[in-house]
Length: 260
Image 1 (cartoon, rainbow, N blue to C red):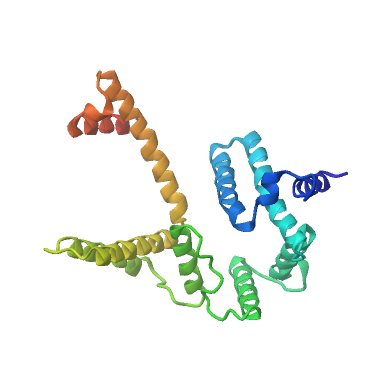
Image 2: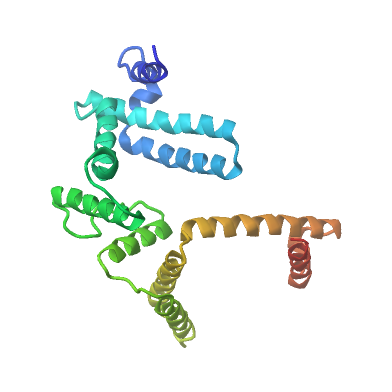
């Protein structure tokens, strides 16, 4: 028995109505979904830490989620694990006609064009005629903004230079501050303007060839690393972090930055 058949068999046994695990039998697509998200982030965390032993285990956990969905769908007569594999295999062959077919491409731009045209044809086949169809609502907001902007860019709705992109960011900053400084702040309007600013910033990141989600993750890790060192410096002064003044914490912060 190969490794995959073993895993599929384990999942089938866990879901067995008579001899399976009561917890596994009670699960549904909706109840498993949060675990799938958690396992995905644990895979990403292992990659970022370059812990490849942990990555192997986390990929196994993520694979188990897919096997879980496949088993539930099989029980309902919807599809099985083989159907999932065939579906993705068909898609990859269809989107790479220059590899698996007769198409030829001269550069990455032509290859990207084939990819986008194939995806558009797939959406049309699903009666999805907007360039923005099939973008998942559940995506993290920064990732969804990036995907929306890429789709629009693919059909020509995009600036072709950096100047207007940057000007839009400054415009949105002004609009945020204009609303924030009103005598009576419209909280909904302020939130809307902040959202516009974030969207414009994602667009700037995209035009600079960077993913906003990744950039913000790195910024989070940098801030966390520095603040932990600030806590250590404050503790060495005999203070709890909550007892230190802002000036003391800022001095410690600058000390940490000076070390890097």
